Image 1 (cartoon, one colour):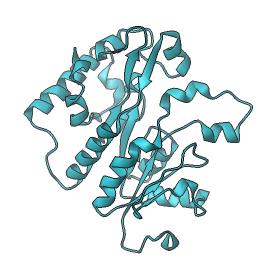
Image 2 (tube, one colour):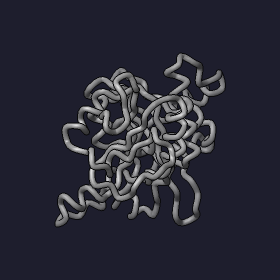
Image 3 (tube, one colour):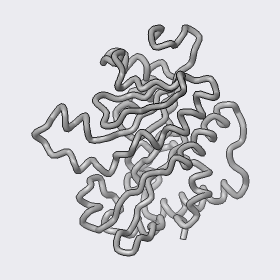
Length: 249
């Protein structure tokens, strides 16, 4: 860790994006494309990473055999996944001792919250909110779903009323000619700003945001039994909902 430039009293966070490369390399004879709906580019995390670095954190891009390199001029942002330092033990150690995790719904997030570290979610799957990592009590965003026939982004009700409302594989999206759309860099940076504010004890939502959040969950729980999600109330990024009000149509 010292060789990476991180000193004893420095704080680090771990970021991660899922892609297909790891499974393709480790198990090349199996078709893993059904997982593709979970993928997104690491480059969409760049603005958020630079924001966190400006707040004094070291930002470590996690992963093994990633598809893309993560390049930046900020010496507090490290593409650990592509570095000579990466090893299995250090993967666990860094996630177990980070300030928090920030990224997709894949393996590294499991490690972070197993060690009771906050795990903020990016690009979660909108069809798995009732059963996925959205159960965690930390802010998250999710992928919108586009109807490829007309180019329209679907509302929450349209998703919940669809034949793919609980889709957990890419084939289901393809059959219905819809596509999960990655969060923009702007969406992700807005979430990062909310995370830092919340960690500093600052308010991240006003009365209107609370109304919007409640409206989302009221719609959602008309279709899913709230008790099945346990006692933790998931919370969507207020800025994400504010910028996607058509979800509530």
